Length: 210
Image (cartoon, rainbow, N blue to C red; front, side, top):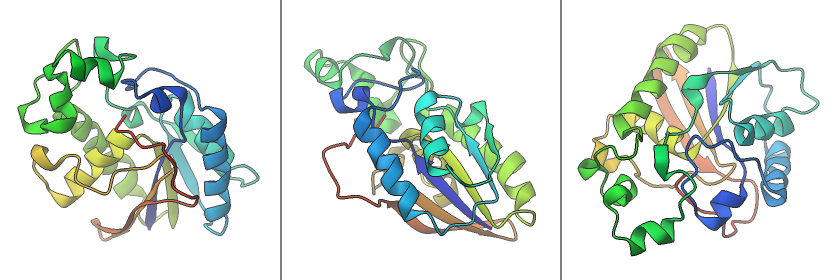
């Protein structure tokens, strides 16, 4: 089976570089454009089934990409982005200017300690592993192409687990771009990463970690 981990398109909070996390922010017009371009790039993939984070930016990305395909799209809370607690909505710039050690979450993950009710890297890795064990692997022989519409941090969590990396390498490159597609081949319960964060548009200034 081939598994396609697809990050959502851009939102205004991505553009403004705010801590987005589990806040339910919709796509902006550019984010929808990226989703339509990604739809074209994936048009020849015969998806059998798809799952999405319940957050609207991920679900709308999925609905655009699966438009005109008769593919069921199921929500699963385990696919939600990292919860940043009381830090959601705060601009990255303001946190750096305040020398807030919350930014260890991105810059020095092994030193991060939960703040403001935020999840930890281990928390989201645990959700990704649970989804792998209870949804992906049991369906290996049932489906040939599975799409998962989710978030940048969540995809990094899944890759951290697959590669068996330490927390310090949680953000190991390449960064998961908006609408970036990471393709994984699964055979006999083993995962082999084929491509990471493949994009189907000219790379613009839409990078972020949230």
